[in-house]
Amino acid sequence: MLHNDANKYEEAQLLSLLADDSEYAFQLIYDRHRSRIYQVSLRYLKSPILAQEVVQDVFLKLWFNRKNLKTDQPVEAWLYQVTKNNLLNRLRKIANEWKAMKGLGLIAETSINNTEAICQEAQYDELLQAAIAQLPDQQQKVFTLARQEQLTYNDIAQRLNISPLTVKTHMSRALDSIKVYLSAHGIIIPAALFIILK
Image (cartoon, rainbow, N blue to C red):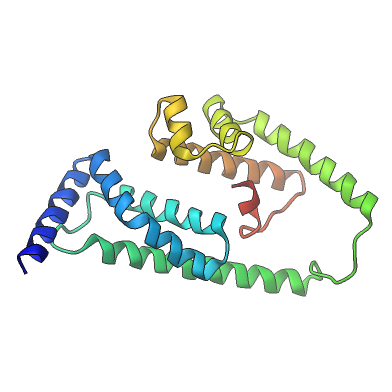
């Protein structure tokens, strides 16, 4: 009982620090819960990349809501409720897009012409490079380090001397801008498939 009370007190202190913008408190909570959130997400989404995205989304939401959390309620319950909602939204979106693609005949058993596929891929790569080139300087740096050098958000944060949350924000804005650019040039990418850029 004393152990439980001590844990509750420590967590309440962490949440108070978090509400005061403590990145140290955020890091402690992140380190304690990220692994389980990742495993739960992986179990349902069957994709390490998508599972990592859920982890990032959940903790980004924690940071944005840090001043509204109740210190007398366990943060674990809050995190897993947000995780559950995130997973449900993703699974619904994937299911709906899969049905739409099937209905439009985009999922076919016939093989596509190889030459045509290569040409389309080259055209897509050219447009993607143009989309990246029009990004603001910092977004370009973050995107390039993440996608071409395969660095983690923490590694990028250290290299650019900014916080991992700022890296995530730059990345999200870069991806949104790229998606808009590609859409304007006739390449519509479903949200569930857009993850290949993430």
